[in-house]
Length: 335
Image (cartoon, rainbow, N blue to C red; front, side):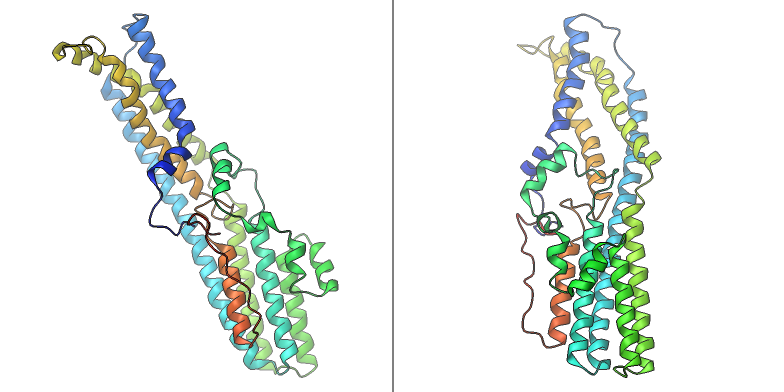
């Protein structure tokens, strides 16, 4: 998540520069064919291109709305996790008699947050983080889950036995919740908590399972591929045809121009078509970077920061003085 006032224009231009190079080439080829080789029939009515541009704008707008909604849903899920975690800490501190058992339940919850965020950061085949523009931009910020292994993180919260059990599980976060449920049952059997407290704490565990499922839905089910491909086809069809629609319009400008540009106005098709097309391709690229809210892009939901914030607050609730440091933004970006 970007925490600054705005992205710099230079930053955005560098991020989209590969598309700018392609658009300049796409605009240059028709101009060379028309102006240099004399293929004057290579034109299209601007009205036809305008209709295609209108249809493309609707498609691009639809995708951006849907991808923004995915990010908003992801933010809502982690806000729910934050609120439920606070309630978990308050209940554990109030219901559990022994401080050691209270600490175990809080530490295990931190382990669940750790497993969940590592799972959500695991790459999927449809994600775009390995594209050259996104991969290059990763140098500007930190992805904590790619700097430290999950083994190193879990050893802070779990016993060696529980750690081994979780690391061999296919869904590590679910396994932690199962261990949490087993610990609650043991406390009930040992009169460490009352039956009412046991029921209440299990209700919160159920909330965690539901929230984990909602986060996994956003991670494991991408923006529908049929909409993604039609968006790309429409955008690049418009970009390819736009210069052909501008050729005759710019050629007409020669009639009222004198001086060194007389007869050469058609060459302006290249920068103008590239600029107009760049608006469409940039919107598509922004939508693509918003599509997967947990992949590790600069616009992701900051799940690492939220997880560390939860851990700090829960440890404060149980009176622990050894609080983890919150992640610091790098170039105004924090994950």
